[in-house]
Length: 488
Length: 94
Image (cartoon, rainbow over all chains, first blue to last red; front, side, top):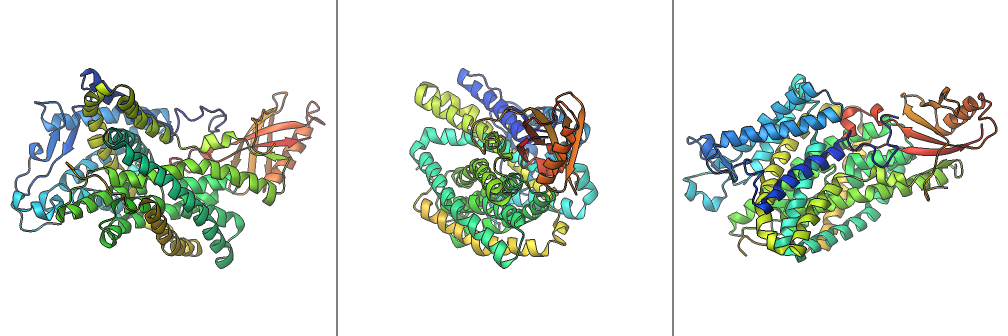
């Protein structure tokens, strides 16, 4: 039965979730070759700061490890490798490969253009380094301007150049791109574990505890609000509660499936979630940086519990990291990169992992207490597996692989790092950039029309209940945790 | 059972929603195509039991039916967020 998840391995070749694992593990494996002194990923390019009036690709791009390579050769290699891999995935998932390739190429060019422009010194350099670059003014946004620009370009396309948005539609897969980036992030967490295992473990445990508490509070509050204040039917209240309070679209679909709602319900709620996630992504990083510039980990964890969808959360975490590191640098503190975005994604991953279990319990309650069909209709435990986010498997494999090297093969730690750093560094950031551009192109604000009551409930629940409560819970479990300082 | 050990099915059906009704398509034990419809899942189950009763080989037997939602009927943009909707098992006596 094509299209039905019947076996435990169903979808391994045909959905984005699994393809994030394959795309992640292929480059992870390539990076591991550095242990044997074979560099399979050193062609990758990364952006560097350049100054207006002095642009050249040699100034704006660096080849990570292949000495003597021109940056454009590295960029071309990045295009060829990632195009081949993503088109293979697109073919396997039965996309229209020609349309995917064309859209992917445009997204790739836009992402790199935004990434390079955003690293112009006036946008990127922190205030205390202006003299070094001969600047008299600047925005001091670090890499944050690249993200803002990519998002703005995507939103302009999605809302004002709709024929182009339609053309890009086949390739604009922010969830696939971000889940791949999260698998690469597992490498970063693994490398961090090599340097600071205690801090990584503390972050993981605090994230799990915070998410557990948040689950118990958010869902019943929003469900009660939907039922009593907004008089929503039971199924709509349940789907919306999961969407708002747990993890956006995937939770809304899982809940709707668990309670056997008509598919139109999660489709409507998901449109709402995608649009509100965009608003959160734009508003919250700057707001948190402004109100709590000295709470990087708390802010990151709160982001993970507040911003819905993995793509928007990871993007918001990355944006927050750039803003907060830049703000801290201006005050003379240089936090190591990666910790803030990791705290944002760590809480989100715990949330994602709980979704399957939550939906399974809800399905049992629904069959017994709402449908009153115990004995006739059954819920298979395989539902937990089918709803388990598979990219988390990739994330854990990459994380624990580097942890295992540290624990069992410490003599290879130094050799493992160069390959890891290319994959978790510029390759991961490129996937983030692709996420920013593509998440913008699929967000169409005109879809809010006609969703009055649901949209109002969403806004009230999110900004009056979820965001403040999430921040309090994040503060409760993460207060006092700080990223290590560079060279500290 | 409701969420315990794994369930084996006698018959398997693909499930979709056409915007108005749930629709289940599959084959009975003799390999004959069977389709059932219902505005609610209990109504679908009743219709399926009636459709299976037409086949004398099924009539009177207690059958465990697997219904797997065909995720291709969800919008393509939505499937990237979650590739699974739901599967269910139903015990019917046509």
